[in-house]
Amino acid sequence: NKLPIDEQTELLPYDKRWEFPRNRLTLGIQLGTGCFGRVVKAEAVGIKGSDEIVKTVAVKMVRSQSNVAAMEALISELKILIHLGSHLNVVNLLGACTKKISKGELLIIVEYCRFGNLQSYLVNHRSSFINLVDEFGNMRSNNEAEEFDYMLRDECFGNTSSEDNDLVSHVTKSLGSSSGRNSLDYECPEMSSLEIMEDALVTESFWQYQQDPDVTLNRPISTRDLISWSYQIARGMDYLASRKVLHGDLAARNVLLADDGVVKVADFGMAKKMYYEGNYEKSGQGLMPVKWMAIESLTDRIFSSQSDVWSFGVLLWELFSLGKLPYPGMEAGHLLIKTIQQGYRMEKPDNAPNFFGEILSNCWKTDPKDRPTFSQLEATICSHMESSI
Ligand code: ADE
Image 1: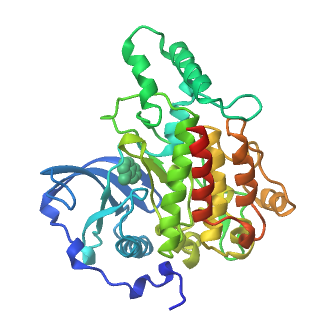
Image 2: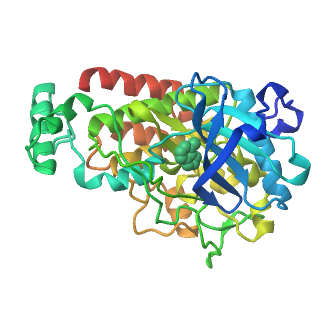
């Protein structure tokens, strides 16, 4: 029983208690699409954990019902979700429609996170960002920060209504809208040798999230939100690691923002299984999140919770650079991998408090054993939160 959980999925049972009647699910607009799958918004009548009669949910499905590999990956993701159990900082399973699975229809119903993915959210909120870190990388003291908060919010929104000032009390809540990604996050490898093709075949990113037109709320974000999200992601990932589930594709685009400033890790299972089986190569659309991958994953195809920790470091870099593409100006290819192998690492973004500098360099230690665990990361970030929030 030593296989990682995603390699055991054939052995995992499907629990019929998750079955949700297809006729109580009404599919709506598309929220995201990728090479293999699609996510749509939907309404579910009387679904798990809801007192509401109708609940808004997100439904994941394959894009082409004849793509057997994509179908298998989705089945394995469903089994992983069932095995995982629920956690606040994970996009939880609500149900599944498996009755027409032989016809290629499998619908996985998960929690809907109405503010979309963090990467788009950060980019959309750059102009109103409230930086509570001074020029030396220190957090401003509480009083100073509050004054600074007010000052900047006035600058951003004008000091015309009292509603604007009320925003200060919402500082750890982040509400707003999201829109589609515009940068290519994945590069294309030659899977057999894991060498990166110079001539990338990539024409679209793995997932492309669209804006949900129902979301119009918009509030600024501050350093405190970024720290709170870092902490929550570490918690979600610690839960995954404790259940022996590897994410394999942790990045800001795969973290979703729900109500009350809660962030949830999404999309585990699918991508990772694809790497193992090398299906990308066959489909001719191989996609690898090179800039998020740990050095041992790139060179030796070794994936572990400790390689997820490396990706978490890159995700922190994305958070504090407000959604920039990592390794700016560098192409995800041979040269980048070689440069990282030679010891090159990104610098702490200016907006990140100093203690994140150490967290980043620890997450990016060459030996996976030298990196902190998610549980240690959670504790470290928490200890700094107490003194800075
Ligand atoms: N886009 C992809 N998955 C989503 C989800 N669960 N909630 C909202 N938007 C999404």
